[in-house]
Length: 363
Ligand SMILES: Cc1ncc(COP(=O)(O)O)c(C=O)c1O
Image (cartoon, rainbow, N blue to C red):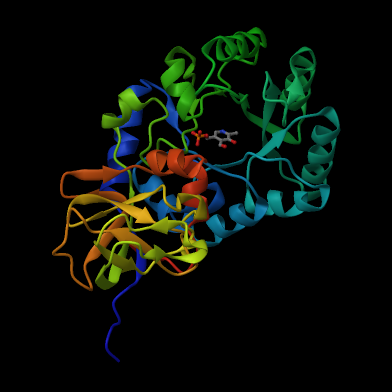
């Protein structure tokens, strides 16, 4: 059986990940790095990335669900795993069995966790989360000391951290400062790690880095502060191929809805990628791709399997040529954050949107 060429694929670069771990460690001083691998490692592939993080010397990993935690343990990840989202009582036995670290947001949750640990005759690792302004999970600041004390004093719980989460670190420094102050106002037992920083927090308020930082966006290579982007290397390059090239006369309408009409004779290419691969349809007549090292506009609507692009600047393009949707080609680069700005979303969603039809290749 001969190997078929891929039509839409993502190359994920371990050297970029190692670089980002090193760069963020250097940036955060003495803080430990807890990379987040939730949502399939932000679309990069949870299991290979978790192994890369473990091999890069990260002593913590963060995930969102017990399902993710189970997949990580089944794949042999031994590193402590913090379950960042809430839990359901029915999940406690499995959380305990897998040795995941539970996030506690209320005395009721602490009681349930302790009862499970007591019945199973082994303490459960927990971290207390404080709501300092995100309004999602976490105990209110005035109630935090009691919950920390209860977790610390319980013979069935092992308190391994106290943490909070920034809501606006990428947009509102004053708000972020207030969250940091509120977090600092809650005392925790000496030696218990404290953490609050996501990627944006690390750059907006580096003095709040604490014992651990929890980068997601930045560990995959996008910096929330554009001026620091050169510190990081995007790990994911998304590619496709030209499947047809043609010259069409002036006045030709392109793609569904005929939203683009050629103002002159134009050389265009059909590229084998569409919203079925996760390319945002909102990039219709907005997005760009790289072809032969130059930026080329997306013309007309993004369809399920194909897009049309403008070859005015690269008329010698041929069928089979590689096209870059995200990443570098020649001297040009398209960042997930730049694509997101054109698509009306955030880099996170650009990555999470990439579908299984896009083969992931780990380099
Ligand atoms: C609790 C928590 N910490 C850290 C992060 C990482 O955020 P970012 O990817 O912006 O660094 C997230 C992401 O949503 C989160 O929910």
